Amino acid sequence: MTSAPLGPPFTSLLSFALGGTATASTSNPAFQPGQRTAEHGIWKQTGQDTYASVREAFILFTTEPNPSVPGFPRGTQRITEAIHVEDDQSTSVASVQFFDVGGSLVRSGCARAVGHRLK
Image (tube, rainbow, N blue to C red; front, side, top):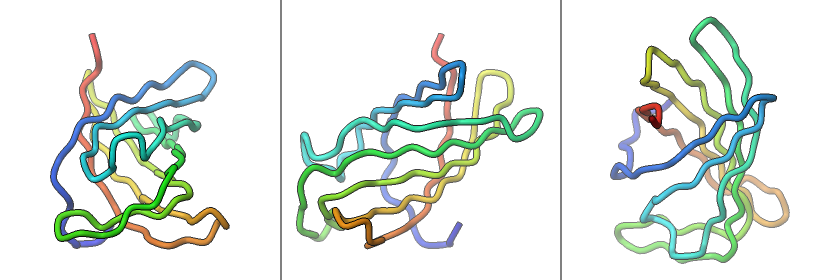
């Protein structure tokens, strides 16, 4: 993870199913309405309280950068996350990559998250 400043916080809902599939939806205001699909991917346990997840979402159309948002190319977003769970809370660090429709990496960054089990 880099020391670059992170964007403003937003909420997401992640679901991890038995058998190793994962889905997620996000409310990240950096994306235009309808620009990004839900995430689909996989997860696995890597230790007693640690997990790894890789999820991808489609970016359906390109947006240009403006002063508050970097802009996103049409293509895909991949989130590779290391998760630590303790009781009903989790913390994670993630690598975030954006690929154009040809599969070329166009941008990457990092993210941190704090989660709570839905009850």
